[in-house]
Image (cartoon, rainbow, N blue to C red; front, side, top):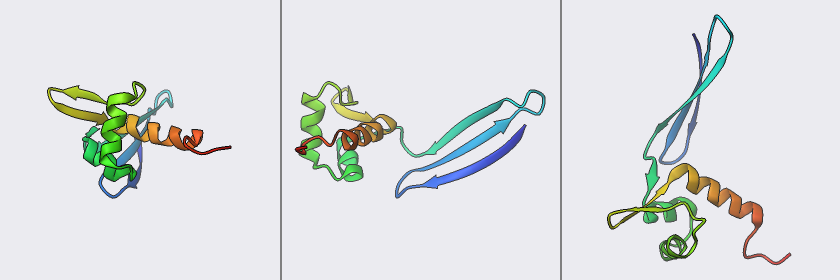
Length: 98
């Protein structure tokens, strides 16, 4: 297998993409390693996005499309789903008049 790497670093999380190429069939396999948590707390989501923590809690409670779940009393938000949700908000330009 041939291995190629690329690194992407944010303030807290670091990801590494590894492209494996099979020498027999030339099939490519892309692996993504993440050095960091898979989930965020509402406080971490607020810091990451710039959205207020009370607003994050309201969205967790009131928006069924928001990617949050509870484990016991703790609210957790998957990192990748949260990033996609924020990016989709930007595409919809919610809160702005046309």
